[in-house]
Image (cartoon, rainbow, N blue to C red; front, side, top):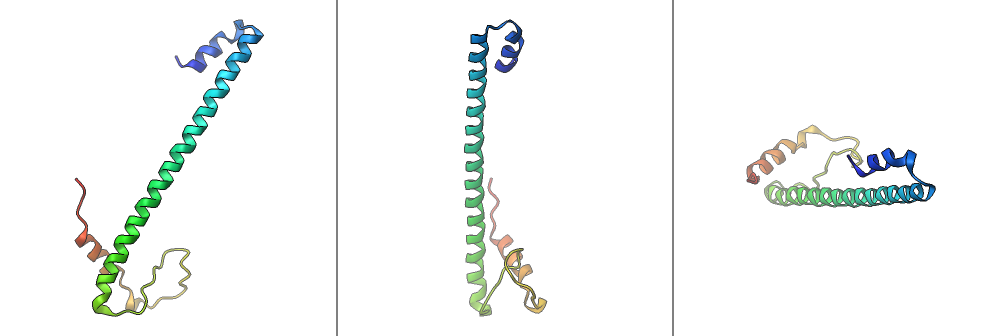
Length: 109
């Protein structure tokens, strides 16, 4: 039985002072839980940012090598929010990028 359930079970027989102390204890547990949740959320966001940076760095590194022989003036991402409204599929290098990145990927063991 958790601490909150213990306090709830004793609630009918508690004095006012005991009830106030129990409520203060519950409030403290809730505050601690909220602080822990905020910390875990921040840690997750930092890990996601770090992972996205690693991915973007790998793509940029591959594209630098890829473009050394292609000589494109621009290579533009077409992800939502990148403000590319039209693209000629003749110059779409997505498949080349995916194949090249997969060829350089070494699975982590």
